[in-house]
Structure formats: C-alpha cells, structure tokens
Amino acid sequence: MYANGKFVPENQPVISVFDHGFLYGDGVFEGIRAYKGRVFKLREHVDRLFDSAKAIDLDIGMSKEDMEEAILETLRQNNLKDAYIRPIVSRGNGDLGLDPLKCGKSNVFIVAKTMDSLYDVMELKAITVGIRRNAPDMLSPNIKSLNYLNNIMAKIEANAKGGQEAIFLDSNGYVAEGSGDNIFIIKNGIVYTPPTINNLKGITRATAIELLEKNKIPVRVENIGLFDVYTADEIFVTGTAAEAAAVVWVDGRTIGTGKTGPVTALMLKEFERITTTTGTEIYTKKAPTRAAAKPAAKTAAAKPAAAKPAAKPAAKAAAKPASKPAARTAASKTAAAKPAAKPAARTVAKTAVAKPAAKPAAKTAATKAPAKKPAAKPAAKKPATKK
Ligand SMILES: Cc1ncc(COP(=O)(O)O)c(C=O)c1O
Image 1 (cartoon, rainbow, N blue to C red):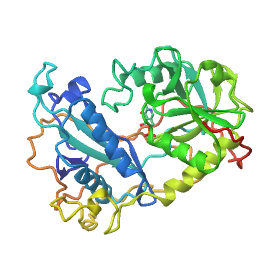
Image 2 (image 1 turned 45 degrees about the horizontal axis):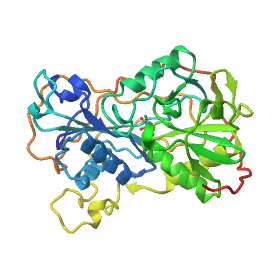
Image 3 (image 1 turned 180 degrees about the horizontal axis):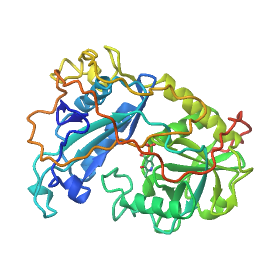
C-alpha cells in the first residue's frame, strides 16, 4: 500500500490512534475501479477527492497529478489490472480534542485489491430505511468523508429487514440514494434520478446518464417520491463498488416484472463496454494523467511504469465477465496502530518497496440472498421526452 510517499506491506501499521481520521472520522476517501489495465474515470475521482477535502478544509499535501501517479503506482506495485482502489486522506495526528488546528500533516494512504461487484446478486431487494440521509445543511452527502455512519446505519437497517440495499429518503421525504450508490427509476421509458443536493455526486451516476442519453433514452433529474419508486417499471442503482445492479423488489412491492428490465439491461451492457474500453492505462509509459499534459514538472508523474516488483500477483485479476460471479471478497482491511513518523515529501517514491502484500483478511459478505443472474436483456423502447 501507499503510505505517505512510500510503499509498505499492507499489514504494516501506518497510522496512530491519535489520527483524527481514526478518532473522529475526520478525513476523506475515494473508491475507484480499474478494469483490464485501465483506471476508470481517474481524473474525476481525484477531483472529487480534492473537492471533499476542500469542503472540510483539509490540505491533502500533494498535487492532483501526484495523487494520480500514486494511485497508478500502487496498482503497479501490486501487479493489478482489475482492482478496487481506495485513496484515504485523514486529518493527521492530533490530541484528544476535536480541533483540526492541533493536528499535524494529513496522512495519505492508498490501498488496492481485487474486488468483485459489491452485491452477490444482480437483482436486488431494497428496503426504504427509517434513518434519513444526512441533510446538506448538516453534513453534505456530497462529501465523501471517513464518517460513513449514516450509511452504515442504513445498511444495518436494510440487513435487519432482509434487503441487500437501503433506500434513503432525505429530511423532506424525497428519495436520496442507496447506502453506497445512486438510484435511478424508469417509468414509461423515461429515466428519473434525484438531483445531487441530497446524495453523492456519483461518478457512475454521471456515466449512466451519459450512456443513456447517448442511446437516446431520456433522463430527467428531478425529485422522486416513494410512490414513484413503488410504481416504477424498472429501478437500478449505480456506484463504483456496486457497479450497476437492478432493484426488483422494494418494501414488499415487486418492481415491474420482478426482473432486470430492458433499459437497465442496456445500461449494464453499455457500462461494461465503457469500463473495459476507456480509462487511464496503468502499465503504459504514457498514461494520460493530467500530469502528462503538464510541462516537465518535478512530479513523479511522467515516470515510466515503474520497475515491476516481483511482488505477489493479484490473485484473481479476472477480467470482469458480463455476468456476475457469486463469490466476493471484502474490501481491504488494514489494521493500524502505529504512530507513523511523519514523512517528508509525498511524491511517489521512486524506489518503492515492492510489497508482497500479506494475505488480506478475507471476509465474505454478510447478507446473502437468492442469487439470480439477469439474462441481460436487449434494450427496448424509449420515448423522446427530454428534460
Ligand atoms: C453514498 C454513496 N452514494 C453514491 C455512490 C456512488 O458514487 P460513485 O459512482 O462515484 O462511486 C457511493 C460510492 O462511492 C456512495 O458511497
């Protein structure tokens, strides 16, 4: 893993319990995926990471160019082509009070692992949960912060009620999003998704809108109520970890036919196409990061695909198949305890320590439901109403 400019074994303690990311959830993160040797929407994710940091007045302490290169180098160090990547920026070490002014430099970590889609089934049951999505005037859901308790509470409730995903309402009763994904409903050939005031500005959400519109399927960004959810012809959710999945049951109501509908199927197909054919190449000398466009700077960016470590190859870097595999390992887990001495610089270390990352504490998913694979359906009709 990347830790403040160095590459270290993923089970090596790298943060102190006095880091406010650990003490208070004071920090930000991203979830990014790589497919077939390319990082999907790298720039967008790095931009969002920096926006989240700016919103909480957190200095990441490195440039976007260096962050992009550090992400790519983390993948190279682990010989990964298909992976889930997690950059984490925490406030840094402080005292037991809340004050960020008393914290030192922020800590930056990047872990990358293989990870299948978040869900074990591709046709989900969702539960509308009682807990409301954080209001924008309380803690904006646009901030991808290290405090995900709001989302975790929703997940706990959905788990308890037999759903694979939660549907959050906002404090006004409008549909906001899932616990870790954005939501779309389809009615009479028109796709609706809520404005992002009450949900994360999902990068997969933006991609889905783009793909749908390219296929002449009208998309309307407007408030949605539960009535619209229950009476939808189709519903799907999108997210980097979740990728895209149909929701076929909500609060006891079967949605549409109870199967992946034609618009969702088209979207899934298009999504798979775009994720496997676009993105920033990991193992090329000319990865199109924004640094490549920059004048010869002193960033580590223009570096050639670093000396490949004999490090352990990614276990099952399987190119994502059209249909979903059943099994999946959980997101990386790294124990932490040690107050890592402050690093000096935070560019990508050239002489990175090749790390044969020790075995991850694998873990299987908690809730499981009857696995059903959608026989991906061809697209269908789409009225021309455009917003
Ligand atoms: C709360 C929440 N909403 C939506 C999303 C989907 O965002 P993206 O598509 O950028 O991964 C995520 C995942 O990051 C999330 O955690």
